[in-house]
Length: 348
Image (cartoon, rainbow, N blue to C red; front, side, top):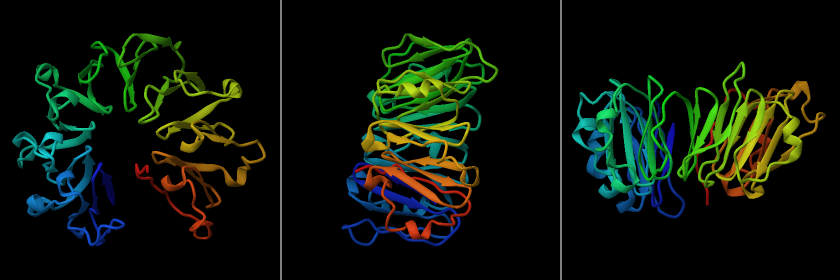
């Protein structure tokens, strides 16, 4: 199941089963998700809440993406279906809507989409100021391996390590890039020799010395220019969020982020969070909390809360109540959780 929320509309798809959805206070959804991968939409018509114009195309939808006022669905055939405000990406070019499009991935800024096709080329559309116009770099958008998006710009990482950026961004063109993370207002790029470049202002703001394992990046989405970097298992602070001194001596194996906080899983199984307490940034477990019989097996994050699944099947959550930080109503059902779980990007 895939769920996407824009500023004024919502959409849900289920690639392989029957389901329906209803948004609080807006009545029955315009569409029901069907076993053939149909899509349910509701909310403001001008913001993508009504998909009637493209209803016959919304078949076998595998995933959804949204801008503030539009949606796209990626179908099993590799074609893109778009609806909502055309100025925010609600009208896609034929290069991605045709049966020959072969789109592998779609990412979005606040008002534009970019699609990576299986041949390594990229197509962008939507608000030109926020990444919808890639004409100045289009000749460079070949052999692209991965696509990234901040709130106002796109970045394409090519197979040779070149990073091509367009939209509302000021990072210079980079080479030998090995990893990229994004927040609402910035990119954080790890270069092969270990330096870390943060934009939109650009410039090398810190350096990572070579380690047996390359540094790993995590970004606090929507938290300005807040980033955290793992140099091996050590935390490198590149964030304006206040970081407790105790973290300097900890060894981390994972990093996760909400819109204003980070959560790290330590090597001995402890969860440590820092940043905005309202967004999940207030949690420090002791060694006693990290009992081997209930070690953490998965951490997920919404925009405002974290949740962790332990090996004994128990679940714990913290952060903003309306973002999933309060699970009191269902806690009795989560004593023996099995498998994995996911979070949506909902924030009040």
